Image 1: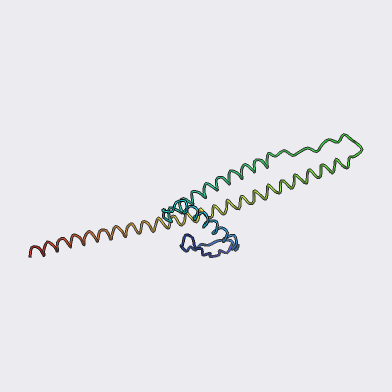
Image 2: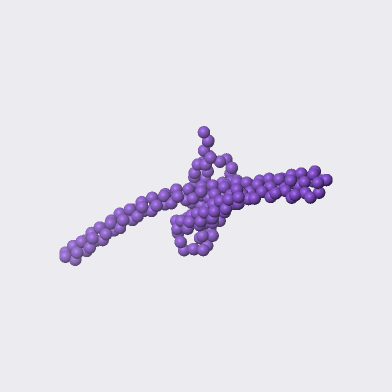
Length: 181
């Protein structure tokens, strides 16, 4: 069973803690730095919005980025699967069969290198998608928390508003009583 590690980060001035399967602190730091960068850019473009709305807009922007990355990934995957394997050139000179074999081998090595590059790119894009999905999951969790806090604050506000109204009614009654006396 994987051991979970507790990580604490500060995002938009608020502290957050979460559990992760990775011990790669550099990866986590890079993820948080990227998130802070995206949040800051969103806030710069919309300076009068709340942190909550900033989180939502950033979440939408990251979702769009993930979709574009996934599309690029699928396109690259299709290209890789459908990539034609170049045929070795036909040797007209039958006296040099060793050179034809050398050409075939070098072409095969080039194809293998290309495939390896595609695989590395696919791996990199997959990691990006996974990081973005983790960020979105964190946003969803935070969004749920913020909504809960919002509902709680709304309820408290309604109670305070109700108490204020009752106090105002009591004040009017006391004024009326003083005036009558």
